Image (tube, rainbow, N blue to C red; front, side, top):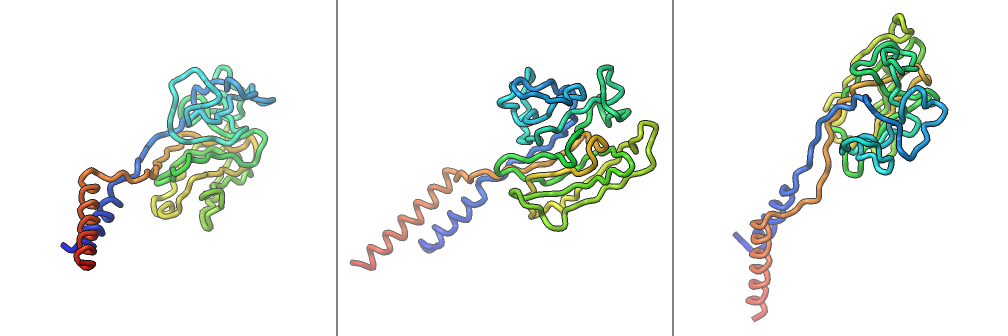
Length: 234
């Protein structure tokens, strides 16, 4: 193999030596205590702000093992207690699982963003909305709305607690492919739209780290190029 081809082969080999890291997990919004350093505000009786609970929780320092999912939830988004919770002050009957679901009682939109270099490879969520809440989901990449990724969610006749019951929504891998989605926003009338059991597949881009054999191949290719140049100069 020629010196130039040796060097090219080394670079090609290096490009594949740092695979992305994948995570699969579900956010159930249960058992989230009040934040240690952030005021829960006037709505504290409904539940705790989620904030960075799924991102190691710094600087809120809640007493629990950290979840290192690289997910930060918008301020004002609460883990709202269902009416099944003995301490609950929410206005929906059941969570999809556990006793809590996520939503906002004052804002018409809430959502989450992923950490630097983290993107969505798969996503599903259960939602519960009251009639006339006009719920939808929007996807963003680096702070910009991605065209064609607004999904209107359906509602139904209200159940006994004025919400329609839990419905699953799934964004296909094809919709996410090549989009670099790193933020999801849920829109709907305040206090009339909640989500639960959001299942995410995320991919974290990593800086390629060459294998020792790749370094050796690159060194051999560069040495061969230098030797060939010396011969031409003699």
